[in-house]
Image 1 (cartoon, one colour):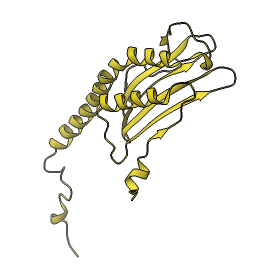
Image 2: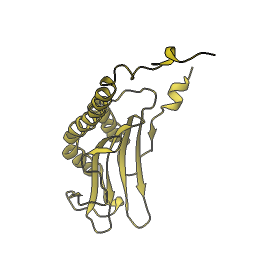
Image 3: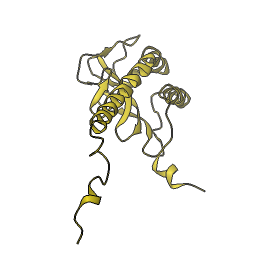
Length: 176
């Protein structure tokens, strides 16, 4: 029997046209392990790739732990061969890692592939090998942002012990 939770949290996995599906699946499993991904309510994982007629495109692995926390890793293929990459985790509006796709982070692939048609499994593995170590650091940065916000809320409401309670003051209200 299919549960509603499984339908709502179903992973979106595009079938790859550039790489071996088994390699993509292995990277997905590695990312889930590195990020301590749990298939809970509000979590999702997706792999997508984009292939355009002019040779541009790209691929990405994207995950959400919850509505306000997640991460993404991938490459955007450029016509000039200066392919830009991203590898970041985020909590709310705080991002850790290179997140600006239009920024300066260029990834040099061996053999200098230009169009998406030029990319092979070896290029995907090269990218993964060089970028997977940053995922733990990025996830730690996102967790630190979450912890900082939780502490700020705790300090704020903790300093108002008498007024921070739900329903405080209702018993002293005049009744009619």
